[in-house]
Length: 271
Image 1 (cartoon, rainbow, N blue to C red):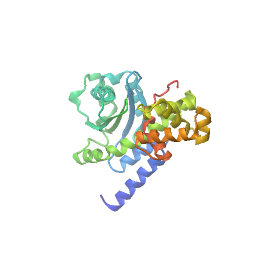
Image 2: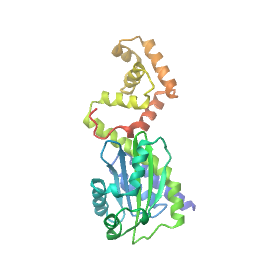
Image 3: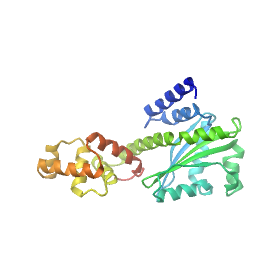
């Protein structure tokens, strides 16, 4: 990659990082990918067993209204005919954390009606998908090419494969922020923190979880001791034990670990 191309690539993805959790994220992510490989539409979906399929991001350099219409129809009814969705469901129940990469294959499509609605009649000719799992949430990223751009070539596939971990990390962080916003508007902050700690360390004792929850709400040792009716030295002991079990040593590391599990919060859950 030439020096100018590398600079354009790094600047584009730096803009995406700055837009995590904001409405600008979707288009900036697509712009960043396009700094490497031309992609016409981008969609990000999430799935958890027992929940409806959720739309996290939609972006387009060709026709945003069309991309939104297709995504609405897909989420509402047609996802059951998508051969990749079978893999999404399996991932939500598995223990694997690797990113699975799928290339569009017309032979795998289950119905001609699905082919017409999502490909031939709207000018979409190719797709590369990333699928992976975080906790019990499966992520599904789709990168579409239209007739005006043409099919992906081998070099494009190699580049998109190399981008998978970068795109996956950005999507996970964005999803975490969005889930946090929804959770905060539908529930009590302290209950939200308690659920985060539970996701973070199910192997922690109830007291250790309580101490960590208090730390995350901004309380100091003395305040935690008063709240839990224990001695400050006991608070310190529980904190040390919890940190040791989590493999961390500081409050900053605790916050970082919580950010990682944020995407596992159920969207719209009554906390």
